Image (cartoon, rainbow, N blue to C red; front, side, top):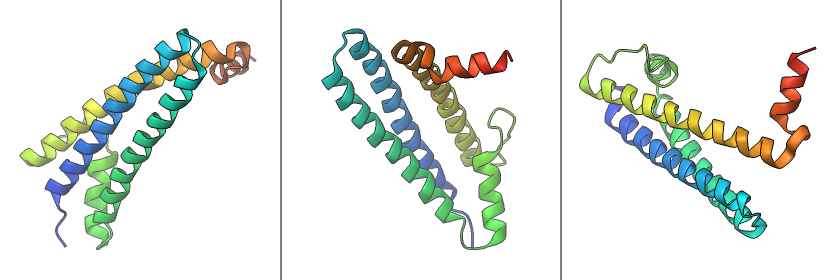
Length: 138
């Protein structure tokens, strides 16, 4: 069975939209934390969780597209897991897939950095990142 490249591209674009919303909500969460507004923080965290679920659902749908046979799965695996900064698409659609993945990866890195700042601000010395940092010194 032929891999539906257009469908993969659309699903990756939806995932990118969810990640973009996660980034927006993360910035909003940082502002809420500065104001020490626990109620708003809980609401923003819930909305962020919903977007994370939406992004994960997109990936689940993509993986389902590769279930028809081994060859289709392998092609899908390369498209979805290879380093998008090094991968070269054989078609315009594949090039677009790697471009979307690069943008998503960049945005996810920014979200992770914001999460790390939030975690350290809220947890102080008990922060996951602080504990990891200290463990690395031993």
